[in-house]
Image 1: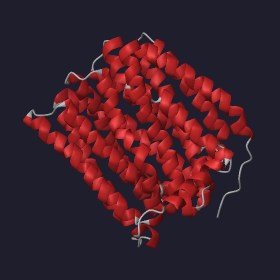
Image 2 (image 1 turned 90 degrees about the vertical axis):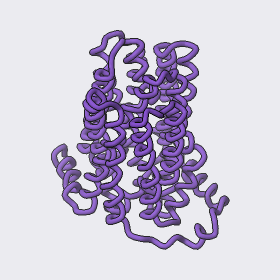
Image 3 (image 1 turned 30 degrees about the vertical axis):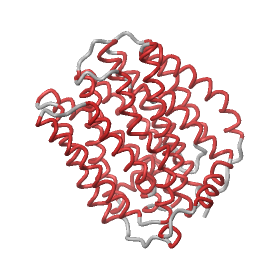
Image 4 (image 1 turned 60 degrees about the horizontal axis):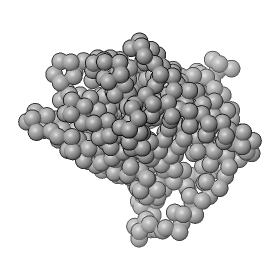
Length: 411
């Protein structure tokens, strides 16, 4: 069963459309993660406080709270190809601008945060369309395997991106990492134009968003206890556990007295863990109920946050971040596969938007709230509180979610 499920999943990489999309996404995400390593370190180097670090993450994620449902409606009724290409092109301008400002010596923390807001807005409007690509280029029964494979490239980029950023920042500075980020958009935009067909927007979208239909589709999704449990699990981990990643540079620099090399190594370890978690999911039967996996790894993630906060050894943080990568990827990818496998095509974009709202919106709010806690309590104390709360919330919701009836896949 192990070899059959694994080999069946790998065959998707050799299909023309999915394989090309997978490779282009890998290149794009390498650039993204190179910037994700360079940006918080740049802010700290500019004298930004931990609160501003949290604010930067909030600026990038907060638009999800307001706009992701709009993005879901656009994905369900609009031309996903045009949406992705347009917003990805706007995003590409942000690292290009940072490269120019760094070369001119004019970069300021408020500019970095403002550009994060631009990226956040474009992400919120385009990510439902982006996340809907995989189900549109594979068969329904292949969706769990395709999502797991997509997680492997995402987490492989978490290894390669920080490694590249570490080398560039130690040699040419942060400008190199931002330049790589800007260049990485090009292959993905080209592939998106090829993979996705041009679609004429529905009459309802051309006339404007139907708010009643929007609310009705959201209610339809969250009314189902099994789907609601998946969204709650993702939201809890994003709000309480993901701030470990946001404030990792603070742990490295202020608690462990480390440098950018150690920070890059730690983020790379997080990517290694995520890759292992994604590969592990490839061995799971596509028809298997993913709830026990998602719930169990969400609990592990909460425990890891506590251990990472209490850790006092420089070698211990990369090991714990690797375990965090395994648990976060396994939990979120399992929940995502569950949601997309049973969502009807007519509201798949909206289902994805709720997943993104839980994950990205939860991370944005968690970064802001945890940033305040870090300022008042300290980074270690704030993260311990987050981890303990996450474990308690997951335990209280686990049994009800696992008992909920599993709906039949929708046509």
